[in-house]
Image (cartoon, rainbow, N blue to C red; front, top):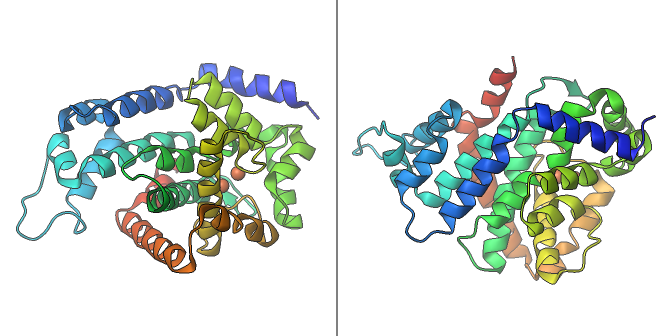
Length: 300
Ligand SMILES: [Fe+2]
Ligand SMILES: [Fe+2]
């Protein structure tokens, strides 16, 4: 078995030769537009106009029943689509669509597939945004981004370490109903938290994002602000687990540990239920827009 250093080196070298470097550049441009009070729809449109699948997703959302009423005309330009659906939704669609380029393989191993991981990542992102906004300030993209990318390491392992222990780790987690990180450690000497953290650092992600990716299972972290964000992700993971929203890298016993984050965040039963219902509605809307079948089609 190769060790931690060899596997991390393999990932970082593989990244140099891959096309995934568009992800950090889109993220940086998007964050700067989202923090600029003078930014307009044209600025957002410029970020994604070269990407056909992102543009198609924006237009389809703008012309869907969710945003377009009977009296409204069809929109055909990206700028008009962004104006109709609003900046916040457009930013989330652009981010999610960009991140989907990480998930290309069609293999299914036990309960895992790239499509299931994609659904999980989107659901955790939505739930993280809802939980964060209910507890802290709203209108911030960070919670959505952290949720979307928390399992970045799993997608990277799938692409670069599939033959180096990722496949048996997935099988063992399924058979033992254990935590994927423990099986990754046993099969590859490295976990998806460590892989995700190394990639996030290489891509110059902001520190709070590196921490969320690198510590979402162990919470081995001192910074209070980041700790709150990680509790948000953990509770979001719990909601996705009970709703069966895609792949979960843990099982029943660990899910009950995740629920402890509810006390830390002081979120009562009623609020948690309302957030869970809203997440289910948003996921159903994305399903109706073809988001989860689209990835399958792209992989064929
Ligand atoms: Fe996860
Ligand atoms: Fe994870």
